[in-house]
Length: 173
Image 1 (cartoon, rainbow, N blue to C red):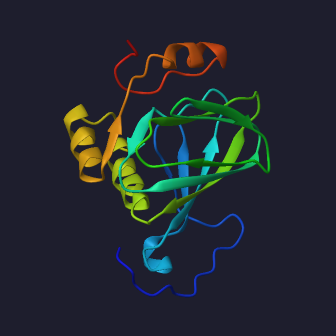
Image 2 (image 1 turned 120 degrees about the vertical axis):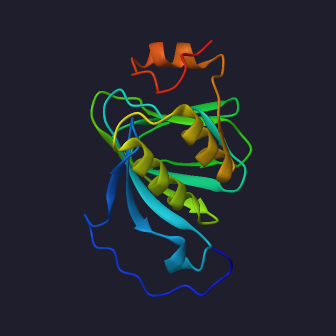
């Protein structure tokens, strides 16, 4: 993405390409091509019971803003549930996850800096769309973007406490 020039970009309410990522969807709002590579912005709708598989980023930080419902966040050893208007920072290098902590659909905005992760979401959606891909293909794609998935010891209790649908991948230890 680099340090290019930002360009004028308009995204009206309800606009943006939407793709499925398994447990949640992503709606693309602003990409690195529009922000000079400085950041990207996506929206994540969270159905009831959804959890994002725990993972670590090595290249970007994420800034989340809850728009509706209740979304739980865990990054490192910090855990919080936020309602509409809540903000949280998930720094690179920490295992983190997010989940719908309530009994109604939830939605959040994710500001990702620097940009680039939106390309991972596009490629991952293309792998998932035709059906479950080979694990090795997801592992290679994730590695290419500096992402690793984890099965932390706290995951089973979290899934049980919030009555979540276990994330795709191998079951937690």
